[in-house]
Length: 82
Image (cartoon, rainbow, N blue to C red; front, side):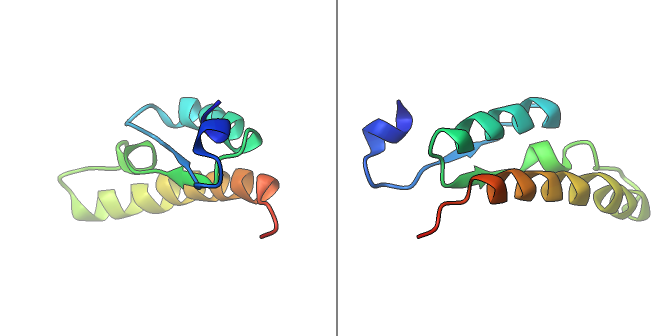
């Protein structure tokens, strides 16, 4: 419905702070139905924050980067030639 209503205007799905697993499902549905991409923030990094900078960095590398790669793969699967 969003794709139909937006006509030729690109649209994307926002993580809105949901957990990553939920967001992955939402991205899959949105991309399959015409979304142009995603806006991901907290779904990537909210589990990575620590008062210890080294720990935050390690979590970003071990959690956020793989999550981003997962989203990239979904987007690539549905990317339209344009």
